[in-house]
Image 1: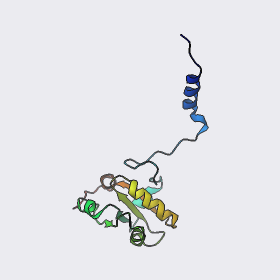
Image 2: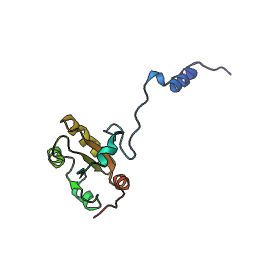
Image 3: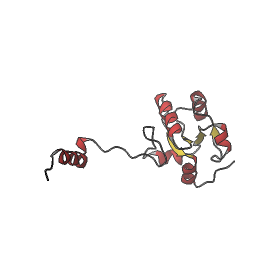
Image 4: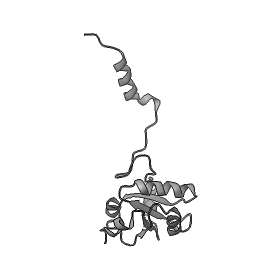
Length: 135
């Protein structure tokens, strides 16, 4: 049986990663390619006066949300910015999976907001905060 050398090259490429740096791991429940939670996100989750902003639709919000959360659909970026307030105000932005909240976080960071965290999905955010979703 004749073995070609191409597969050995592929294996070597996979083992050494073709010189690529290790990609950051995604937040649990978050979609790839969107802003992820940061290692320093713990300080935001626990910050005094942190705002919880749910960027799902009003119907999704009515189905269960974090206690004290503000509902501003992701399509209303100016409304989300107004809900956060000051550019250095702490806020956890969440949705159903982390995709929409990730997009909102990235867009607000581009506007100069500095203390935002993508909270991922509502259930994961509730678990992290140790609370139950309310209707």
